Image (cartoon, rainbow, N blue to C red):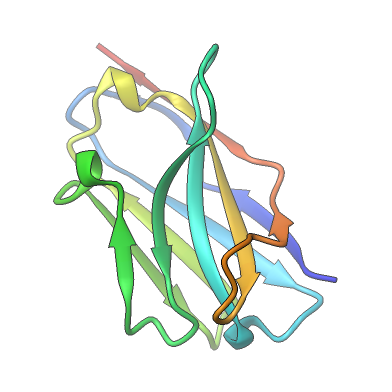
Amino acid sequence: QVQLVESGGGLVQAGGSLRLSCAASGGTFSRYGMGWFRQAPGKEREFVAAISWSGGSTNYADSLKGRFTISRDNAKNTVYLQMNSLKPEDTAVYYCAARYSGGGVYNYWGQGTQVTVSS
């Protein structure tokens, strides 16, 4: 059983940056692909970014390419999401998730961290 805890959310002005962290415990972190998702009020949860177990492969939602960067440190059991040039429409609860390497479904989810971008 993997536990995921997000941190780093908060209130930031438009144009600013935040770095989210997701610390994993209870499993072998390097066996899992990791992803970030977000859910804005009144909207469905949407995919943000994903990274392979080794960090060698990443992919992003098309609308976020160039502003968001996902990375991981397997020695620290942590995955990161660097968010730059933030916009009010980036306001959402951000969740990290883990899936078995090569799997399609995310098996474990964190509790989320709130990101609010003011205009």
